[in-house]
Length: 116
Image (cartoon, rainbow, N blue to C red):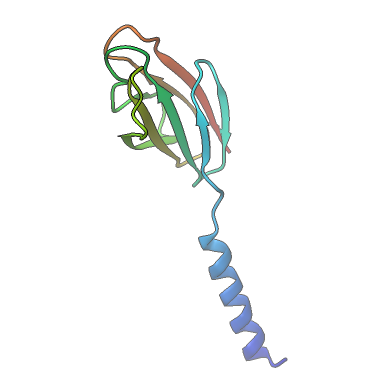
């Protein structure tokens, strides 16, 4: 293998690996979780409302270690109340407290996210 071919293969491999970031962490929220993310990793947090109202977007985030991306309703729609997906991205090492308030009487969600 000549030097030119070897360096071309290395550049291709590094480009491929750079595009392969960590998979999103997807889970259903229960109050008081401590989650660990790598910088660049996404967090997909699904929450369920029971009764009237919904979880309020945007949530409160205590530090720039985590950035809020968006919130959407998730199908299938159930009579109990809406299911919502809150998406976040880990941006810098540190710790962030995520607080998601409810518009009615459902409990507030408080989760801790450690970004490494």
